[in-house]
Length: 152
Image 1: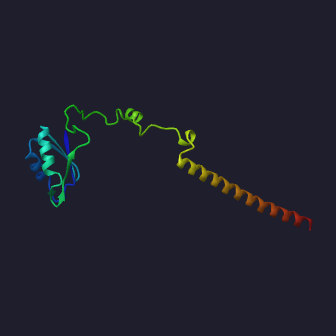
Image 2: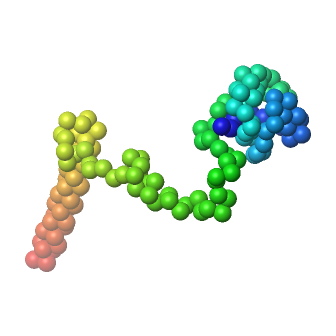
């Protein structure tokens, strides 16, 4: 399991971070911009580092040290050559976030959001219709005046 190290100060160099985290046991460190991932050979070393260094002021900022959301950033079983997108369509297909769902308005009239939407659409239609009616009245008056002029 790897640790996420966040809020690393710009005043702290990579070597200093390596020295601090290596003092808890042998580890591999993957650096990013102002954060890093640390994987210890033994979980107990990672737990000790997490407990000691989380919220500890380091270079003017408090470090954020927690277990990373995805384990095994340095896992030997993880293939570097494997395409990141190879199974992405399957994951999206099965994910509730990407699944399409039927509109609530078709199935339920009880949803307040749907009621508001229906009212707004109805109001827009009425506004368009009233505008058309006004325009048609204006045109018909103009046409009547034109016809009157022809007879004069």
